[in-house]
Length: 349
Image (cartoon, rainbow, N blue to C red):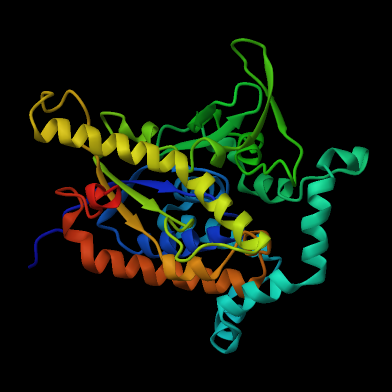
């Protein structure tokens, strides 16, 4: 009889990126297939916050199958369809992601929207304003977030007044916190929340400005060393952007990756201190970084496709996430718990 499989504990760091977050949906779907992988901590921002909340609430209610059902329900609502399997079949015959991006960039309605967004504000709607994400997030039902069981959940937001990151965890996570984490100020009114300890009411924007996602909450001593980043904003993009659309898109990517890159630099610095025995082992956490991504796919997309959760695009993104997770596990599963699969020194060389 074969021996029992060793359970490997990991933390997940889930980036934000609008509709591109369906890539993370695919990654999580595959991870849930592997009972030898235990998710101990989750840090999420924006779409990553929605994915993280669905994952945790689903696990608490129905284990791995409950988590899969919660994620499926989330993205079916995002795509406003009843059966994503139909769209998964149709994507085999549809346009490429690069073609979809070009069509959106050339689309007159989207060109008008881009210009309108620069001249307008979500506050101009007055009493008619509604956040379209609210009913979707309410359906996640955060009422069980105060349970101690299940993976620890951290949601990043940006405090508008201070410009600092504010990370909410487990019992602090509410519908408003998740909406704040996904609050792009060009599209949505800031989410106001009152600190129960100070009584101060602050407005919050998308957490991606200050932590996409925040890695430092995952450095708690009782959490595992391994941090698996699901990256949906390409770190590199070949060529020099020349059109207004390309320039704005690359600014968006650089801005939303900057906070994560700063934390990765800090991780590498600490790892070098430990390796050189300049600090005693155990006094600082030796974090093992892994990454699941598909930069080739993401380079075909743009900031506009993040705002278009079409069933067609979501199905394709989910499939890409499943494939990327399969490739990661095939190449790096044995490294989990022993060594990093991302060479941070080379990344910053």
